[in-house]
Image (cartoon, rainbow, N blue to C red; front, side, top):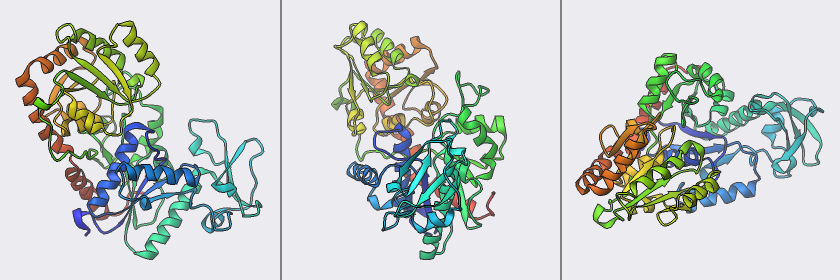
Length: 455
């Protein structure tokens, strides 16, 4: 075994794309898992299939290294970077996957990988399922064949990559699939030495987010194929239990929260801005930040020196700025933009507030606990109930504005409460520490490698 109890294997973390400051917590969680696995001794590669150019990918990786999200850019692999040979045509593995054929005349095409690959432009939410021909060209631009859709292309790349890795070291290969779309396309891929572990990042339900609410359309097919994965990792027990009650236990599911690293030392309450409330996340409708602002306006009646900082970017910035101006709150409410140092924001704060309507796990909430910052949260699916089960914050009924206002007032004005919640927060954060997360993931991998594959 490697250090960290991970079995001796190749670990491929498969994502659709990984781009700085895009896709919110998904990107952060995927990179964190890769970093934590590598730190635990697992031989890990990060695979992406986005068709950007190689220079863009290189710049993105450099940004991740600069921010400390990954140790080195060498752990990344991109399908389209590897689809080109030294002469500028399609690489051998791409040509080998192709068969005679031509572009679909009914579709537009766009060249990627320096023109070695031409992708059909499919305007459909289920574009990834198309079998429309992908055109493969040599260095002279000559058509050398087609590949029948994105799924066939992705699987061909995985087969090529697996062959290279196993030639270097013949050992099992574990794919950590981070994307539902990719999961649909690779559910049946691989030989007896391959295991596929599928992670979950977000809620599977449509509004009003009750256990029996309609499924999000993106999840409908996924639940049909979930039993084919060797394991499914749910970020919270709440979501896993909802899924079990509705679909049974055939999916071989496990609870495996995303790990969040705690700082070496916590800033005590006496050194924080005692009336500062912070929010971290996208400025998006699902975060219900308009209601956070309205609730905070009521808090100001009793705590006139309180301030609210809404950190992040998104489509609702203009509407939120207009609301702040309309309510005359510019002196107390600000929208500073994105931060690459969320820990520094949390270390200044007296309270972390979340008014999200839904979450997967809620990484910012977990990070607040790790920094000893008391949390006030609505009880939503999913995240706050699990992470605040042992303390660290106040959980109030979902959508209850009066309860939210009361909780904020209490934490801001009752010193003893704020201090006790801060002490509980660090203990609660231990449940999602990287060490715990890696121990759980390693146990899942040992279990799936110890039995035949499910596909």
